[in-house]
Amino acid sequence: TLTDAHAATDAARVLDAPALWSAQAHMPSVVGRQLVIDRAEGSYVFTTDGQRLFDGTAGLWHANVGHAHPELARAAFEQMQRLETYHVFARYSNDKALELGERLAALSPIERAKVILNSGGSDAIDVACKLARRHWQQQGRPTKQVILSREHAYHGLHAYGTSIAGLPFNREGYGTESLVPETARVSFDDLAQVEETIERIGADRIAAIVAEPVQGTGGVNPPAPGYLEGLQRLARDHDILLVLDEVITGFGRTGEMFAAQRYGIEPDLVTFAKGVTSGYAPLGGVLVAPRLWEPFYVDAPETPVFRHGATYAGHATAAAVALANLDILERDGLVPRVRELEEVLRRELDALRERQEAVVDVRVAGFLGGISLDERLVNERVADRAVDLGVITRPLRGNTLQLSPPFIVSDREVVDYVAAIEQAIVEEA
Ligand code: PLP
Image 1 (tube, rainbow, N blue to C red):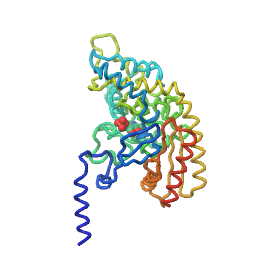
Image 2: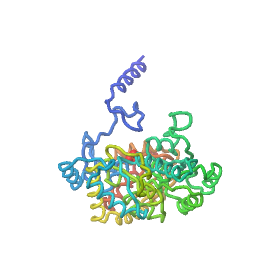
Image 3: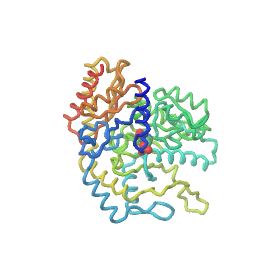
Image 4: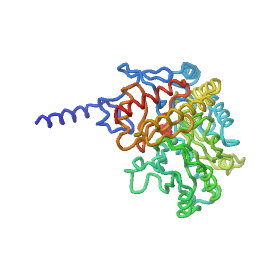
């Protein structure tokens, strides 16, 4: 029949897809409708078929200083001409990684922090969790192994990130328990439940709690008032390490260099990536508190070695780009600018919710917004429609749309962006 013939053509078309297998994609749905970006200018990206799109998500929340910045291109070019990289491994290091270490330690919400560098956020989470477990082993408390994370959390997809994922679909399918044993989820907004979970498992079994200060992929969920402070108190009372995952929030997204500073939290470990280079080079890392690093720095033969590292740890070109990116953030006053943009975004989203019945909730923390839609609308469809109207937003858990433009946009561009999303909502309703 004609339908069978159609199905056969479709199946062939899907099998004939490009060789490149995309991340987090239902491939049969993606084939033939990929948006292929081949260039950008500031807050705008251009597809290979010539469409100009306002990048309202800054890529995957990464392009904080905007795209295709010539100063960052130059930093990479100049560094590569001198030295592409030399590994920060055993006794070797490179000057750019050392300089970035000093710079990050000075910005860190942790006093006297040491800095471990690697290739991205998922890497950083693996390091933070390994270091947390290693810490308790070394303190002679080897039962403290469990890593707690919050419901709806996203911490990347390496081994630990997969295992502590609070979005179940990212955890499933790799075995009967999880990739890494001894993980558990706690409530994302209810401290009494967190405490119950700690008591049920036993603090003598728990190494660390990992939390995004503002949940990103889980639907843009700012912390309930008092939640992070409460989490910190519970962690301290039970001798549990607090890991803040600042992969999205780090480097200005909440209007402070780190969200820990905005919310007044002093974590033991901070993971970062994305904004450290604005995505111009793959780089992530961990800021480490003295109680964790000091035992590795005791001047004695029996002092242990933290057995972690990789070829690209402290990649010199990535570090050079990060230094140039931090220069831009500081010179152009982009972090204070985020606080102004936050107010514009809040005003626009509050007005949107007033006008549109289908908008059930809006959330803003820094220059990071979420719009939750009611069940009459499907966020994927609205996001697709928004692209037709020239703007990028991203569907997230909870029928939510993500808004996280680069920090370089004008107030007017924020207004126009929300207006375009509103039009997409109206057209889809
Ligand atoms: N942690 C958080 C909070 C993230 O949002 C992400 C990525 O979106 C990651 C970790 C993983 O980072 P990467 O994709 O650089 O591995």
